[in-house]
Length: 272
Image (cartoon, rainbow, N blue to C red; front, side, top):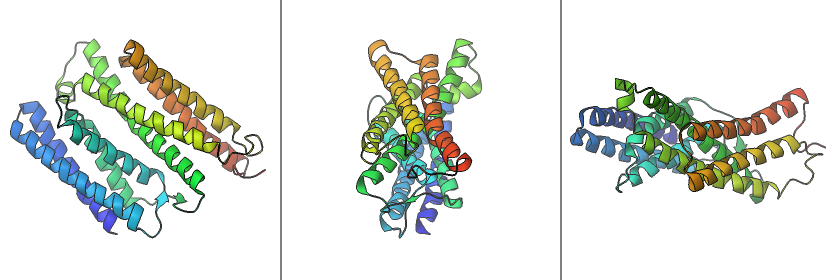
């Protein structure tokens, strides 16, 4: 399929951009940085083309995790490219973001996952599903960034700046991107919770109590983290721990509830 071909080409350009960006950071080469930026722009163009083909030209697009992660990856790459035009460029974070996006694209081209068909549900339910899955996609990628923040923060506290740490993006750059992703995920999670009320008639009869409570707890954790960042400048270990805690609650809300309900009890949320 054409979208799979575009995904593979985009992933190849992303990886080429990573190599050139690594050379740029390690050797302070302006030429390598320009080539890295050009490869990333070309890759993002192909990535966007693949997304357009899948969501608008495909006969049966589905909301599966890899497709949503691919869409989230595109948003993050575009964010990095746009930031390159400003004084506070986040493009060095491409050393982390671009390999993740490339891996997702390659997996999306080789694996076929089951998902909800676009248009198979009501508008309110479609918006709920889209916002829920995209929010989870953002927070999944955010967790990876939190891991890198924790990694760099640990070595900085130990005053051990080895070659690997020196080639990674600056801690403040990764933290800035981390909180931008958390903000985007928080907005989408808010939409998900709000639209969820449109079709939940009885959380007890529809077996959604645990999922609803856990999702609200995750929303509160991320909301508190964003407030603490704005009010007190929270960062570092505290930000990482709260990010991991919020994502863990979302994992339990979706996968834990789904496993108990559908596998152990053999029911669905619609069943009474």
